[in-house]
Image 1: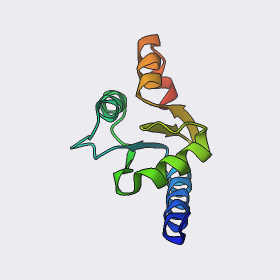
Image 2: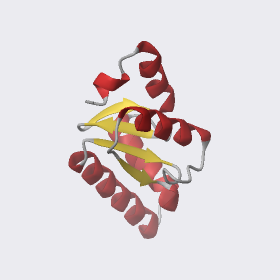
Image 3: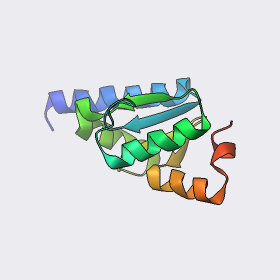
Length: 111
């Protein structure tokens, strides 16, 4: 691994840790809420917007491999998007959809 790659991974790890610690709800996604760059990120944004007015998003596309490694280290999952609530990993868009179908997404998102 080159020193640039190592630095990118370390920077991504620091950003991941800080975002999770500093925000009640944070979504690591591909793209932005206004322009999601994959269907899974778009679905996650839609579900979060149905239940919360405020949440933070982090666009991982600027350093996708580094964010993928950093998020996998944190959650054990390498797939994106990933949602965290009060520092705890909730899951991706599929898990959010399951919670929505079960009627417990509102409680999980602390609404």
